[in-house]
Image 1 (cartoon, one colour):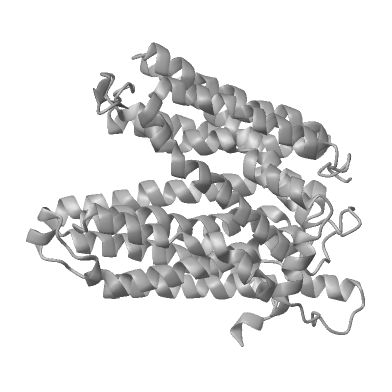
Image 2 (cartoon, rainbow, N blue to C red):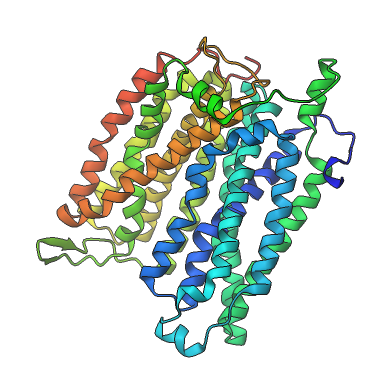
Length: 467
């Protein structure tokens, strides 16, 4: 069986050879399913109500992935799951190219294309979503197995960086490919077939690279321990959840995962509308419209998607380096501050309504750098909590449930952004941007509280290099 080919690899191989490509591969299908698909259906003329409803459903595999994460622990190795899911996602992208419908031009122009025309496309997207979520489970578990806590901290910024580069690849390059083909041919469906084909080729090349580059961590660990077999104990889904929810400090951990990013959970839904909305404030039936900066789409792309993304990446990389030197416990206060204090730039911009693009770009870069730096502590804490035993100490790289527990943590991470997002728009419409941003700043008190409580329970040396 080709997935079992021996390549004489060692888990001591430099993480630089596989961490960047692994997390780029993790990001590509996610952005394809959750972002590129939205624009594709819009260009195909699917009405906005149907578009929003059905593309929202595509997100749920990532929210629910903790339910089947124990299967990844029980069956085969994490490496096997990574390669298998990459092969499956490559095949699904190729099927999307072949089966993508070609609606009539009149329907696309009038936005009357029924979503039922894309039933097979949606089925393929939802299967891709499940495969991508499963790939996430295996990749995150593999990452924890292949590193000690100090190495995890050093590379957490790198993995976040390449995941976000994948986001740029999807939102910029794939969309640009579709746009160029559409401009040259006038054929909208064909343009998206070309873009999906580019995604399929990219995933295929990454899969081939990983076949020969990903270290066989679990097999090597078994050999180092002179074990005859790498068979795993039969784990149950119920026990995986039971061991997670009976961990010491579970309620506090859940509160931390839900509330640490509460201000960002509110801001992320309204920051882009604020940048693009007109500066003119209009009252309509008691609701406030406008009061934004009135930037063009190109300006937002350059400032938020360009400068902002660069500083987000820099913040993530430096955050990982900082934790590897000082440990998670010493880093928490600084990172909580950098996550929340820069949000004041939106309070300033909503009050002053600046028009200088250099000034706007600078404060956006500051806010994004702070978010990238502060978010690193959140990711590191999820790894820490998922690797703790019932006794409270770190359980290390051989725990059978660490992958499942981390997947459950990421479900709470998704929920932490979904819950504030549901109400953010209604709050802004009721009070306007400036007061809304002040409310987001006030929510920083929850970040301070959960940071104070969690910090007392974190091991002093966790995350330090060679700790």
